[in-house]
Length: 117
Image (tube, rainbow, N blue to C red; front, side, top):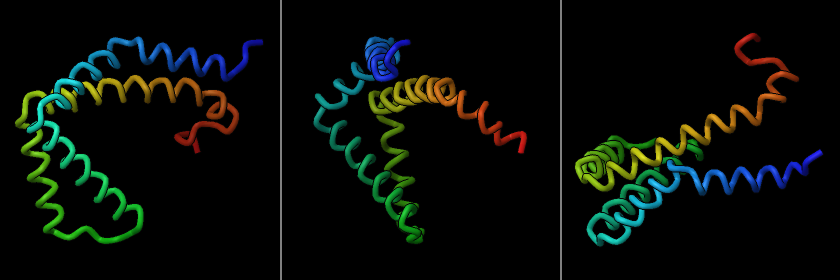
């Protein structure tokens, strides 16, 4: 019987070698090597993190913060490289979500699907 951790490390390697990850890495490096794009992207990520932290702590997000976030999102979406980075990130996230569904299937089968409840 294979060691479950060996299988996990094989999966990590497969993700690193996937087209989705390679594309994401290439676009990420393009953004990080462009000072203006890097600053814009980091501002976007910081804004995302701040709002997520507030939500997790149950702190209400002000209308001003919502507007600021909307403005940051609009600006990054207009930047070709950052928009491409977000698109590639989404592609890889879909793969990882599919993998997660596959590896949690034994638990779903054991406890029954939540949809059937």
